[in-house]
Image (cartoon, rainbow, N blue to C red; front, side, top):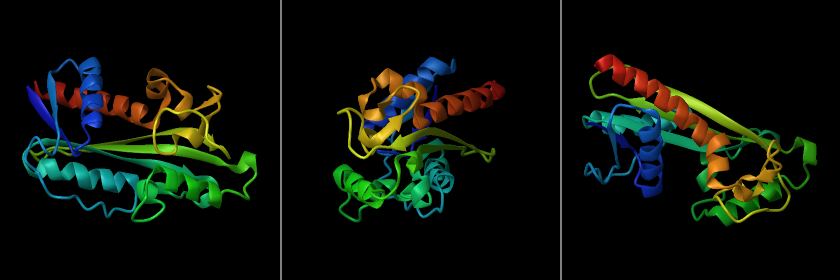
Length: 204
């Protein structure tokens, strides 16, 4: 069985990827975490884009002999010049959390008219191999608008403020099935599964 390492310690992310790959790829795969392979260090995400950061993280398991996979994602708001971008998780500073990040976002957009509050979630997902083969990166987005007040109690991060016009609701109001069908991460994961499946078939 092929083993791939998701450069994360987030058990929910590991489980999510395992379920998706089981559904989309016929080749048996086991998704491991950094903890599973005994990597205890911290990975410095010092890239200038989602793509660069995902490559940096995916390269760590690859250097240890595994197929390495990593994602980097966040929110890009047009009226803020693309911020918070790669700093989405720590937008409000060293003690950032979802509430503080959202408060800063809404404050910075306070004078922006509703039609100009356009934004997108971005997810870059990279794969790197230990045997010298060229890896790949896929990127997907989900377009929406930033509301002035939150709606819904599901999701996390900026989801209560991220309104998705085709569904007429925020990410935080969606079911998990709805969200996975249109989200940046869901789209990127499906693109990733297609590319990885082709590469694994070529090995056989």
